[in-house]
Each structure stands twice: as C-alpha cells, then as structure tokens.
Image (cartoon, rainbow, N blue to C red):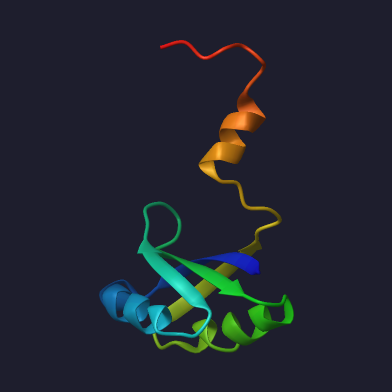
Amino acid sequence: MVTAIVHINAEVDRIPEVAQTIAEIDGVSEVYSITGEFDLMAMVRVAAYEEIAEVVPGRINKVAGVLHTETHIAFRAYSRHDLDAAFSIGFPETD
C-alpha cells in the first residue's frame, strides 16, 4: 500500500464542493479542511506508486476549483505502539 498526502489549494468559495468531489475519487481515503498555507489535505492510498499519477494529476488536479496541489509520499506508517517504542529510552513506565 502506497500512501500520499496531498495538500490542496482551492478557490475559497468552492472549498466544500471541491472537498466532496475529491473525497469521491477512487484511491482517496479521506479529505480534511486544514489551517495554514493549504485549504485541504487528501490522504491517497493506492496499491502501487504508478497509481499516484492517475489519482493526483489525473483526477484531483482536474477537479473544478483546485488551484494547486503539493504531494508528499509516505515512506513508513507508524502506529501508536510503534511510536511509543521508538521514543522509549529504556526507563520503566511510572503512573
């Protein structure tokens, strides 16, 4: 499974419509409205890297109201358990 995080700038008056349209695209698992430089963030989860090209430039960028996208490919996913282990330095837990 390949995960890409896509930051999206959209026309301000069309953000809800753009988000809903993107959420309906195959390969898009979630769409969030966010603060900061971008308006939306879409999580794209596909079987192969080549499919990112089909979903992002092939579908997301063509949604009416999308002005700009920036795509980040995830290398590894960490669960809460993995993060707790990664940041543990060997001290016993205290309550």
